[in-house]
Image (cartoon, rainbow, N blue to C red; front, side, top):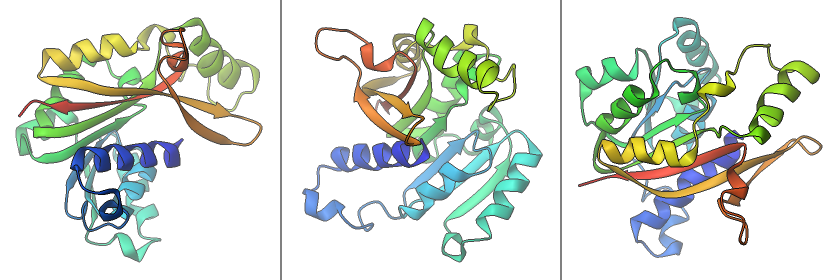
Amino acid sequence: MNRTRTQYIRAHLADLSRLPSEETLGRGWIKGRRVVDVGCGGGLASEALARLGMHVVGVDAARENVEMARVHAQGDPMLRGSLEYVQTTAEQLVRQQGEGFDVVVSLEVIEHVADPVAFVKSLVELAKPGASLFISTMNRTPVSMLVDVLVPEYILGVVPRGTHDHGKFIAPEELSLMLRAFGAETLDTRGLVLNPLTNTCHLVSQDIGLLRNAGVQANYILAARKAK
């Protein structure tokens, strides 16, 4: 999923840049943009975004996650100077830095927080006017109960039981309403479909033909933009 999400973020930012496609093939157009990866965990997404040429601040409330991310990043000398990690929360970072970021990213985090509305508010507050936000999470549907809870946690056992609470999953329209309430508009939503046989992930449209929301029945990623 990490590779697919990173490619989506890059492609979406390239589209918003309004530059000719040949000018977005390299890294010059994106270099130097400040990104915050909220709930960075072990830092895999933060590292991938830094390799695109942006300056990434990975934040996580858990000290062990930040320490693990720092150790992992040391394995790639190319990340020095473009990636840093901070143990903090989104709410605390707002008080420290305010609207300081060109891109705000939070991947597979919101379904774990106690107050998703307050969390979304903090994400928007971290974004500069006109900045992009990317959030990936799980829809609250029977499909996601099967794909994201029952199979991985109770049938295959590849995820510890109790990792996910299906009642805390958020539908795309709910997330869009939260973002709008704090001054950000959803621009695009895509489903993230995992193929366990090939261990690959690919993007699908939110609506498939006449079937509304058919592509986002389980995992999805949403792109939004804060008002200028």
